[in-house]
Length: 258
Picture (cartoon, one colour):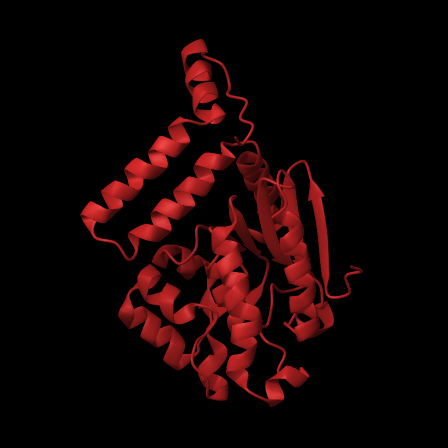
């Protein structure tokens, strides 16, 4: 597929998906979603990549859904069923870390897409905006699930109902994102984080994602059982054996992601 709305590359185990409609602040369209689905399919191929970075071209991450896209003239819920919900499920299921590199405004569905990633790193000039109330909608793309779990019900209500931008620095203080960095250091910080994860124990990262996400809806006993099952799987992997050997040999580990 020839991409028109995104850029995509895989280098040294790092897959980078760049939303690329800078003239429209990278707003989502039906065509963009089709290209994203194709790119995620490439990431899902065995041994294709060990980390995925999602970012935006130009001066912002993404303005959310493009309201001028024809899909918005019909059943608004249909685009969630066809585009956003399947994408979020696929991102959660990817057996690798997913980084949202938020380089500017992340609004509406784009804000919640970023928050659905495993780690969110943002420029200090970035902000997160639950813009839905401004056009008479509710937060979607997982926002009503993610927000109260990350920042509590009161802050989630404020973000959703008041539809005011949340600066990246405050988002970090609230625990909404992993890290806020100065704009001039952003590219280097993202690259370093991606390299670190791409050379890490990818299988253990995948199992960690499963364990932490399961904890949201499980009781203590069920979570202990999940830990036991997933730790057994991790302990049978080559990365565990390499990690132990490297520790005992006082050398850096060379993980293969297996």
